[in-house]
Length: 107
Length: 516
Image: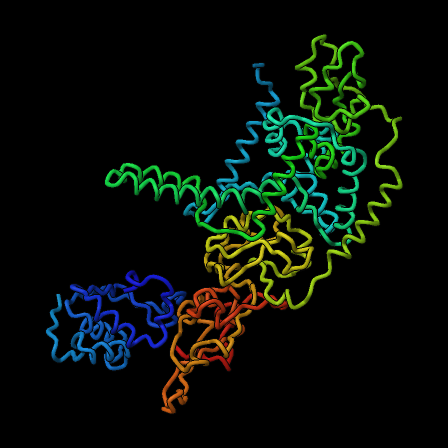
């Protein structure tokens, strides 16, 4: 989503959860890809420490952006409901965050 | 047209080298800059003298300057006639400028009144040599003014060209990337003091109206120093007086005195007199110098110069403390005084700065800090992995540190301004600065605080705080702060600049890492 925002990008960062949901309700994504070959578990997103990097070698693909995010959350050992942006997007009806209702195909 | 002389060939070669090195002194995708225009300062005896007098120590970096001085003692002031890029530019221009009568007030001892106070002020710890060094003047005019202008013109021009060519623009694209990869500035930056730097250079060009090589013979402190060193050179012109029959040298010689006497020290060894001699009467020979002529500068001049240097040093030393609160020096500079003794104000560090963080100080560091580099975080920040400024600094005023050490050098310390910072002032989450902080353990962290928002509801807000002993003052937090204009977090100068400790030692008991 970063690429579609011009100007003072940092300014949408305050109250980021509804802001992200708003952008996604205007600019719809058709296919969501999440690269989880290596994930940074702490001290990110810039800087970070190699000790905080976990190698998972996973790639997530989905047509539902909320479901993709919700699944990615589990890789960090968290629940989708822990992430405010996911919750806000779910409430706005942008997708499914309840992983029981998502068909997950592992390849 | 006459055949080009060896001297002119050498001049053009060095001018080309100078411009080539200037263009090479730029980030071109590599972490290392192998060659830079700093070589022209390292073989510059004026820079050497200023450094020796002010820092009162020697550095091997300036050894070429010492060698140049020794060569000058034997060969005379050949640097001005054969090498100096500013001199070459003047030589190329001067034939196109119609001359009026020489300015009387420039002649005589004025040049010593520039050089001696400059060196004497250096002795009293204020090194202003870089302000009037010809190479520094030239590089500043290029770096701060002409080069950004070139970049801007070409990139804007190219956009226009794209509009005109329409669908054929793809044929033009490779040419632009060629320009951008090899010639244009990496970043488009505009600098304060740019127009003044350019004006100073243009003033030197303007002086050519009055006399050939007016700056070089009457003002240039480097030239004056070289002519003092080359006074007793073994490589001498003969005859010392103009020949009665011809006097052609009067027109061609760039360093003849008004009395028609060839002054040994002032002679730039440009060989123009030989090239234009119709009688083959003039020439250069090796011979012992005559030592019986009066020694310049006179005692009065020397004493007066040293005294005025002392007063100059006092005068320039004043600066208001509150201006200095935001005077952030490049990474690795630990002591302001030591830095000012070594900095030649050439602007190379500003030119290579990857994130356009360095700018010339106007009056933030007082008069003595004019043109010295300072970090302005709101405009650019110090890239954590970059060491370019230290690599190009000619005198190691900014030390050339390996990446791992540079990361630990303290530029300043960030401070939150709670009246502006969004979570404090508006009770809204933000964490932009925290996310950008490049320190592996994060110098900016936040704690979740329960606070009443302005509707009276209790909410949880992430309040940021700074771990002081982890912050290196790189300024990225201030740079990215989403507030308009003034940032909610600002980097302030600190005197205590001990580098950050190793990672193991950074987390003191009171600063337990909340992310693990």
